[in-house]
Amino acid sequence: ELGGRANVDWLLGIAQDGAQPIKLRRRAATAAARTGATTAELVRLYDTTTDRELKRALVDLYVQLGDRPAVDKLLLIARTEPDRDLRKRTVSRLARVDDPRVKEALRELIEQ
Image (tube, rainbow, N blue to C red; front, side):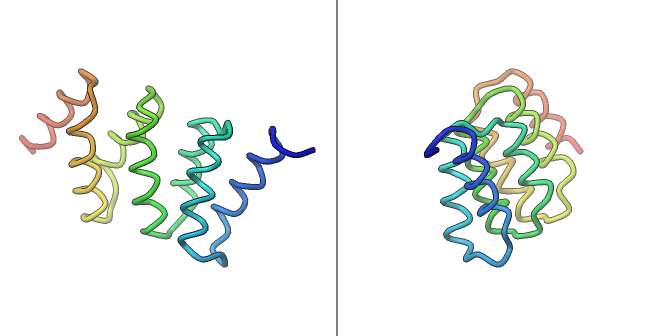
């Protein structure tokens, strides 16, 4: 069967595979989002990868998704990500998200 759940799982598998070139992994994550991967699956992808480039791509993807779980993950990254550059990128991207929780969180981050 082409498409459907099997396709999403295959794409997520490629995105998770550290042996694959990063360009392919980023494309696979984006394609998985377009073909029906849940935000929870895409959040898990961030949590299971150590690859900074993939994390950067996922931050951008979460901004595009803009649903509550994606925004929750962005807020968590902005507060807790040990990689300072990723944290800064996330805060910068969050500034474009129209969600009242984001405005409050950004204010808190700035005041810290």
